[in-house]
Length: 151
Image (cartoon, one colour):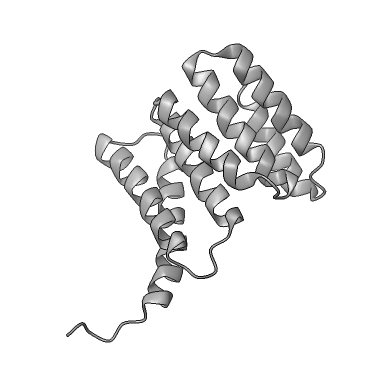
């Protein structure tokens, strides 16, 4: 017989905990190969826990898959960064411009590391058009700063 356990509370805790732990590894200037694998595993665990929550939304999945794309870009894996950027984009349709902008930022980053400069330029322009529609100044600047880092 399984022990008493609040599964919904666990999913709520680990969806955020794993996302934040992956982010901490993303922010490290230098990571070991083991940390790279842990970063990816944490991201996938976060998505699993989000998908297991009854309150999971397209916005949550947009952010989770954006993080997946960004991690693969950090690891230099352009095809996977592109694939997860496209998944992010699919969940971002109909969301606020901030999330759609970041979906295009993920695609631009993936194209950039793949050496597909015209596609990167196109996706960056799409992201910039979305950034212009973001009403919260701090969020708009965050997106614009990430886009500027691609140049």
